[in-house]
Length: 109
Image (cartoon, rainbow, N blue to C red):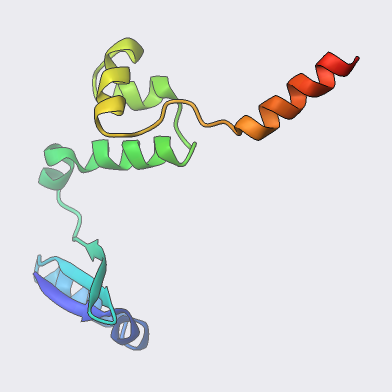
């Protein structure tokens, strides 16, 4: 794995292509701290779980539904819930203050 600072990558983006042409991966750093990994496309990467990782990230961002992320894992929604819990990924994302305000408004009518 090669390492490249984000500033160097910004000034020389072709460095990324060179890493990929060599079928290597790149650790991207900012001030010496890792901030990301870039890897060349490889079917084996997908087979080893990258697709599932991307699905989890998309679910966390709200871009995939529970059913969609479960499908990526070949699980039912019910089977997916314990896995999400184990990974510390909340299934529901809501604002308690907003819900309490809504209840208060409904109660005042």
